[in-house]
Length: 138
Figure 1 (cartoon, rainbow, N blue to C red):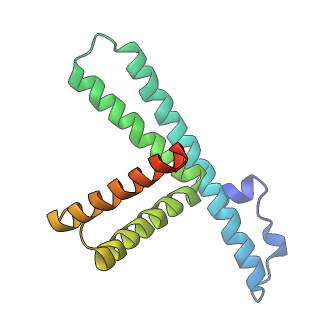
Figure 2 (spheres, one colour):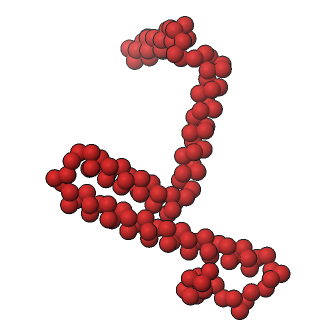
């Protein structure tokens, strides 16, 4: 809170303890300040590891693999700090795909089951034949 006040983001002269909107704006400002500082830290770490990778070309493969994993982890953290809604969309998408897969298995059967796989292959062959016949003009 002191950093936010020092940067001029929060003016405590306008504080009204009975105003819930003031506290909401205060929370938003502090959250954004936190995310901004988090981005700066992650960027500094990412630059450090990128320079480490660039200067350690003679290092062992295990070391380089560890450095690259760290860089990828930091990139993911930085992405989450800058664009937090992307992770929420990816999580929701994974849940939707899982739900769709479960519904498919419930209605049509598990594609890993040999009987269901044979039915799917028969259906695929039927559509392929019909498509080939339509292209030939029959």
